[in-house]
Image 1 (spheres, rainbow, N blue to C red):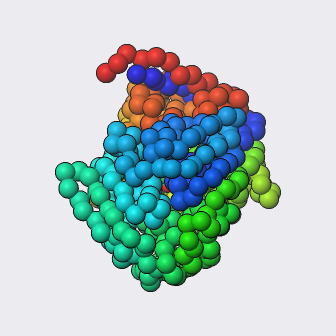
Image 2: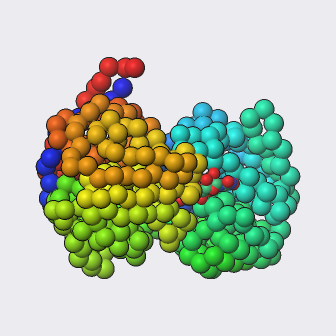
Image 3: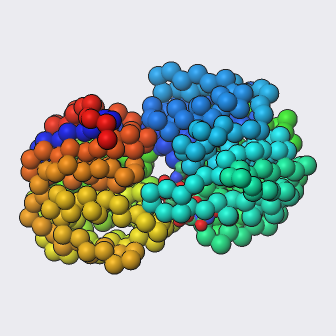
Length: 421
Ligand code: UD1
C-alpha cells in the first residue's frame, strides 16, 4: 500500500507543464477501434488509466506501443469480447462499446458498477444505441449487443452526459445516414474526439455545441490518423488551486485557458492574481483567501472534477463558502478527511457550507477517489505539519508524475511504502 507524505507550509514556486488530457485520450483510444490502420497519439500521459485502456485494447486484438508519451495503435482484426477484469477496473472502458458495436455488429462487456462518487448508470448510452438499431440484452452482469449496420437517427439526451455523447458519436460514425445528437455534452474532450474521428475519415460537426451532426460513412473510409491530445484542464486546475492555497506563484505551460474559464474567475474571487497568455497561466496566490461559492454544472459550468480541490482552497478563506454538487450524488468523500485536518464543513444533502479556518493541520487521511485524493494533496501542501495520505493508487490513476511535478516547484512531498491495511 503506497502512501504520500507531505510536509506542509511551503509555497509552490516555479513552472509546471500540463500533461495530455486523461479524459480525452481514453476516448481517442476507444475511437481508434472503428478503423483498421495505424493510429498515433502524441502527449499521452503515463497514468494508470491509460495502461488499463491499453490492456483493454490489447485483449481485443490491438497491437499497442507506448514510448515517450507517444502511443501507437496498430489495428487490423479485432473481436468484441471486452476483458472483464480490466473493464471492472475502469468505468471509462464502457466507451469501447459504441465503436465495437458499429464495426463488428456485436459486443459483450461487463456492466460497470457504481463508484465512490455515485451510482453512475449507463442507461443513456444503452437507450440511444438501441435507438440507432442495436439489440441489447443485460444479463448476469454483462451487456451483449448486436446489430446489422446501425441507422442514423435524431437523438435527444435527457441529460448532457459526456460518456453517452461520445459513445453515440463513435457508434454513429459508421451508421447509415445522419445522426443528430441534441442536448449533447459540450466538454472540450468531446471536441477532441470529434477532431480525431474526422482525421480518421469520419464526418462530424458541431462538437462543443449542444447539437452534434454525424454523417455516417462506410467502414473502409476510416483509417490511419496522427493526433496530439489536448492538455488536461483538470490537472491544470488542480495545480492552480494548489498554488493559490499555498500562497505561491507558478506558471502553467501547455494549458488552454478557455477550458477553465469559470475556475479562473472563481480563483480571482478568492484573491488570486492571474496573468493569462495564449497557452500559459501565471497565478500568484493572495495572502488573504476570500470565500467563493460554486455550483458544479456540465461544461462550460464549474467542473465537478475540480469541486473537491476548490473545497480544500476555501477551507482557509476569510468567511463562508457554499459548494453545491449537482452532477454526482455522493461526491463529498473528501469532506470527512478535510475535517480531520481541521476544516469546518457542514453538509446538507448536495451542498456543503465551508467556514474558513485560520489553518489546517497535518493528519492521517485517505483518498477515496481520484479528485478527492488531489484535494487532500492540496490541503496537505498548505497545512501545518505532516499529512499522510493513503489510497494513493486512486491519485495515480489520473495525474502524471504528480509527486515529481510538485517537488519541482518546491513541495515537500514523497511517496513511501506504507503498511498494507
Ligand atoms: C466524465 C468524466 C468524469 C467527469 C464527468 C462529468 C471521463 C473518463 N470521465 O464521466 O471525470 O466527472 O464526465 O464531467 O471522461 N448519467 C446517467 N446515465 C447515463 C450516463 C450518465 O444517469 O447513461 C449520470 C451520471 O450518473 C452522472 C452524470 O450523469 O451523475 C454525469 O455523467 P457523465 O457526464 O456521463 O460522466 P462520465 O462520462 O461518466
